[in-house]
Length: 123
Image 1: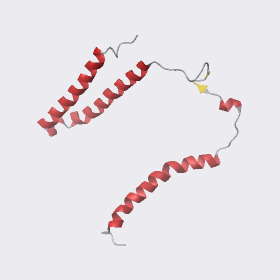
Image 2: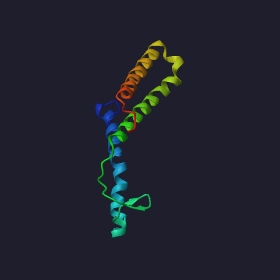
Image 3: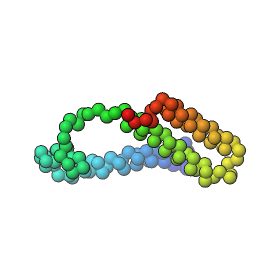
Image 4: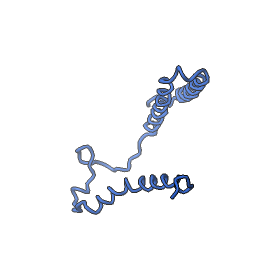
């Protein structure tokens, strides 16, 4: 097969996709076949930090837990975007500086909005 053919270039992508599917599935299937299967009430019991589980597992959490988690993720992602920008700040120029100021301003507006709606106050 000539190396300049259309099929040859996509062969690498096909091999990569095949490897990406087989690599994680092979250990899972191997564990299903090889692992011993001896279920018992002790093994099937819910394990929670070494303590006996108490109460109904289907309890409702307060929505504020999720809101705090979402706000944390937003500002964590902001940090992930700011760090590479700060590392290469000198070589990026004025346009990148203006873009980052705009990015931080949009997130700041979101923080002020959450603050004014009293989302960040724990009741």
